[in-house]
Image (cartoon, rainbow, N blue to C red; front, side):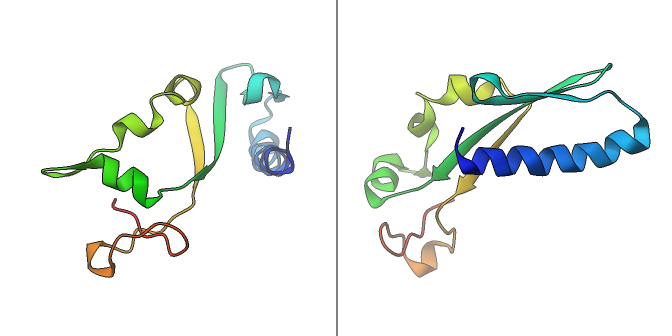
Length: 113
């Protein structure tokens, strides 16, 4: 597990521990298979975490359609890994400054939303 996952896990445990004290729940963390599950006597919450979501010019040119942009194919290979969690968190590693700023890839990154 890399450092980012550990920091996220510690942060989430801290927040949930605060609520745990208020609600007096038994809370456990399971970090198997890159999923983080928090279990109490009532429910299970599963998190999936993914790193940088970037958009290079090759990607947004490929996603261009007559009516705008369609990025649905960009994540088809990882969708099964991220779709089964209750919460999926990703780092959006681009800006969405709008068409008037001009779409661009590296190094200025402005992507269509």
